[in-house]
Image (cartoon, rainbow, N blue to C red):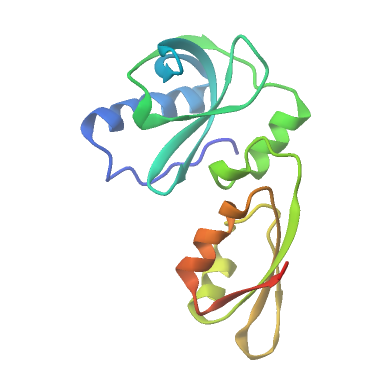
Length: 178
């Protein structure tokens, strides 16, 4: 699935409205037109919104601009204006875009082709967390003795796993790479 609904209780009413417009457009594959700050001030973009992700309490929309076939991320709180265009778009067929969408569990791993395999050891509540939820790209779990588990994943950026490790210390350890 390309769409994940995220808890939006912490959003201001204006941001909630923008988020709701984006989630509507993602679900129904409708273009959006946004006013977004860039290097030279505000610029208008027409986008194919494909997925919403969150990172450190910021919401991002992963989208493909109509002028180029590349997956980009836009921070939702930076969008100054949004309009849903009631024209349906086709999901891009580019394998790199589809792969990024499929494996994106955070904004850090988007559009990065280099992947690094990691191995974590988790126990207690951290082990339960990983058993209940896929939070890392290509996550695979194997059981160890004493209630511990090994979590294998392939990440594109260390920030995909670093906050997770910090959150679950001391019940989680990075075994590879050391």
